[in-house]
Length: 183
Image (cartoon, helix red, strand yellow):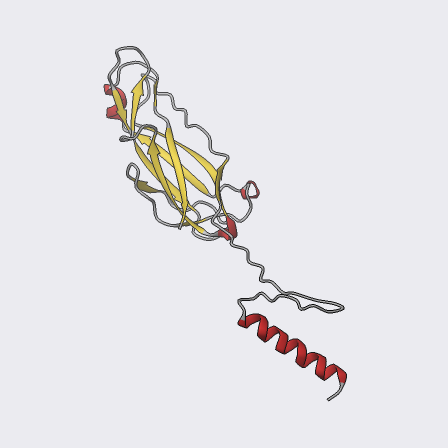
């Protein structure tokens, strides 16, 4: 056996002994010494919502029909992983806009629809209704944190004409939380 074959055999045997000791090996006393260790990296889920805007609507006396408004935004998931979306309200409760004026107890009920991308780095697909604090279907996230300026998710709210006509003149609002969770 030549020197290269012996060295190769020694390296293979050394690797086997490293594996047998849980990927670590301590060096021995001598002119030189070497040890071995295992290196591990655990990548946890990472997800981020960016570029989400408020939805501002105005209803005038001359308007007929309901109102609909939406916002498009970016959902990043490391590795273009999958996620679900949950749309809840600050403090809990249903989708109801509350009047700002003192003494106004009117509420305007609205519905929410969401959409996300069906494939990695894709555009938001078809909107689907969601109920308060219930997870949506599964969507695919974008693999860059700003979605390369191509939004991949959307939320739409709708208010019926009847809800608007029955409301007292006022400014109505509710804070809505969009929670995206890796799946």
